[in-house]
Length: 493
Image 1 (spheres, rainbow, N blue to C red):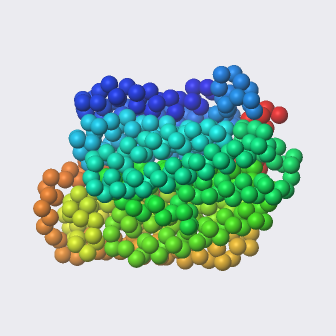
Image 2 (cartoon, rainbow, N blue to C red):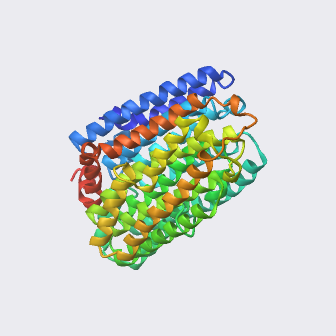
Image 3 (cartoon, one colour):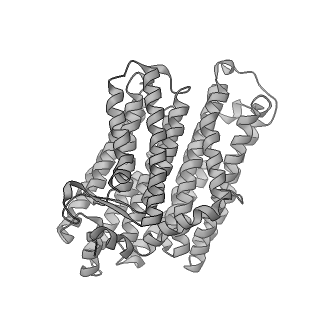
């Protein structure tokens, strides 16, 4: 029990340290990173199965029992997100071999990547609100390194903005935790839920809930706090874009879902209504951005914003169906966004530009790239029977049952507009007259395709095999819908 729970954090942690000693030996770094990432996928699979069979797993660090010590908790939502993170990390490592460039690899690239995983997986696993802040800081410090490696002008400019936004966000996070602790006198998330239920509906709790929504909203890029994302995610190379787009915003989304289903449930008429309004506005703004731009990166980046809104709308509605849909769609979106960033990274490497108007006819020379992108595009838009359809179906069904008719209608309409935005890339980039590009012969397209093909296959199997994965998804949603399951497992009541 202990090993499976903490191993997904310890493996990248020690890998990151070991890689520091091989900083100039890039082939060794690659092999160590690849083996470590694969082992983490296997361990995460075993953890998911253990949680499915035996229920929520907990680890009281240093033998201090909850709520007095630091507790790690792996319920099904956490375990599934850890598995998805590990899979994306493995694909990113494979993709990085041929794309990130040896100069970046020599500057602690793989170490920073592994320390980022420590922060992300730790945030998904911790049962302590202050340690959630600690793991946030770990992933942020690693992301600063990954964002600036290479030292191009755009990277330096966007890194400064990114650091400023996150320093302010982190300060607000500490303030929010301080206020919460002053009211409830505990940092253990399960115990916080118990204490808030004892206090009952309180104005100060509502204020703290909104403050946490601002903190996690900045990190998750909800409207109107998404302003930093399009520039920051545009700057780094493709594997870093994929890692950021698939994982970092989802940590903010997970944090909102966890807190707004576990303990900020005393004034849902206000807090969850506010969340649903912001979620719908996030979808609208994301869709407008996605269809307005002719830049490959910007289109996919704004589709990140759309997905954040869709997932959080399901969480705000708070019906069993909508929560099931949010969990299903969250995992789908992590895989498919990483795959799409990998694919547009290959397109940019071939053409030397991210401007759609300067490319055409790629499918004639690169049919594997074209059809992989096509399948990923259909999955993103939610075309049945692919994975995006099932998650959205449950979210919309839950929204209608919860009488959120407008929101459900906008989610449905957004699917068509997302399809339009992503098909614009396929039509302009892959159809038409083939062009000659200066450096395309130097691009190892087949080797670069391994990572996105792996993720697209996993996403397709996730959708086509939904009957197999549904017991795991419903188990995760049940814990969100009934927080007593989580509380009893942690506090052992």
